[in-house]
Image (tube, rainbow, N blue to C red; front, side, top):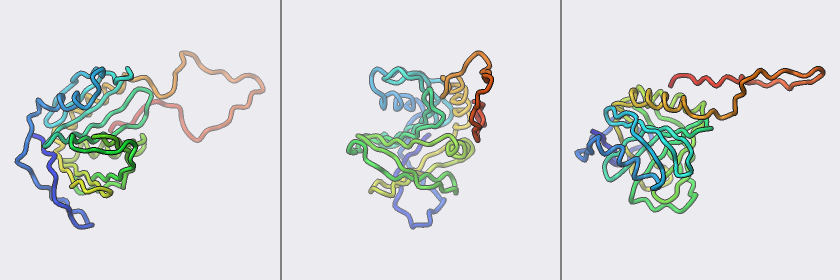
Length: 218
């Protein structure tokens, strides 16, 4: 069962012990939580349910393909990780029905996975949702932590929301399904079925990066 209980505020040096809550939700509610957080014309389907987490895929309300994993806990607290077609990074989405956030409010978020405390992240909130955009490079370590960790803790330094804690049971299988889903997404840059030849006398600027679309396994 999943637990996204609020815990009392802690000292500046964050302790690694996390308190379990007696408020639990059945795994069967996970996808319902994902669907409820989306507009009515979004079309999402379940790819896999493992432990506390569900992998899903489909299209957004703007008919953009998306893949994700998510879990829902006490009081409707919901956390999801998504990647949309044409993107290399991910979005981490936090939702709580009782939040009333003015549109485009800048919010500070910090994640801790087991004893590993991440950097302060800048997020944008509107209504009952907060979105953290995480570029590809930063997402690699974060997703590895989600896959191999046991617990995640979410801190809200700029507000009075108490820290959330949640279990990571089932994330490895869910991330495998997520990776399979996002491998089918349209690439961030268009590909061509032919080799681009350099014209005689043409000077092509060099670049300090490769063009491979291969992603390291997270």
